[in-house]
Image (cartoon, rainbow, N blue to C red):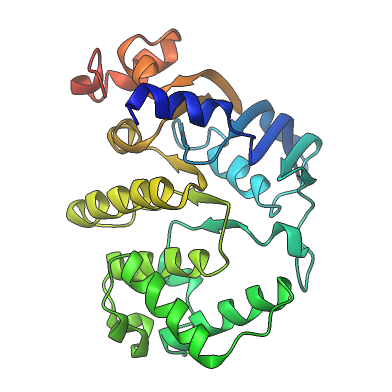
Length: 277
């Protein structure tokens, strides 16, 4: 299949995640209501990565957290596989939303330092199996845990370690493995590589691209690293002050930006301007 044919196939696939006119606001004591996200829309399809870029404080993370139900929408809609994404409950989220997962910036914060990696992976597997109405065996659980660890490029024997015994890149791969154990359809990754060293950033970025291609899932990557987004994202949305000022195929955004703000961002990474990606 040629690149053009693949692009056409992705564009014609049914959306996994659809956002329309999403608004996220917060009440600030003594200052009224602050609007962090102002009426944005996006679509994510199988085999597609959408990169969202913009300066710090522009609303990227507020939008990411709304996509998975952590932040409540003030208005607008977010639909995953046709189901409305509702705010996360205190105890357990709806089973139909479990394949909508998030990978956070700091992998250590999402891991329990007092429990071995295998215990934390088993907990995720058990919860996902219950949500699917399955009663898997211990052998099936171990086999799937081993498979996802290998898929994210880790030696399965690392599962017996505690989080502090792993490098930052290894911990982020464990966080990705946890998401994969739910058999996700969409992963929202909020600054997934910014806390890593340069070598780990490159490898984790390549891993995310490969997972999307191999598993035909959808992914939203929030990042301030334009070079990473240019390398792995199919589409790019440029965010400023809570709004998308530009959105389109990554190659077009980087080679022929339409918004002055996009050009301003690209000026900080001059090798991207006018470059085919």
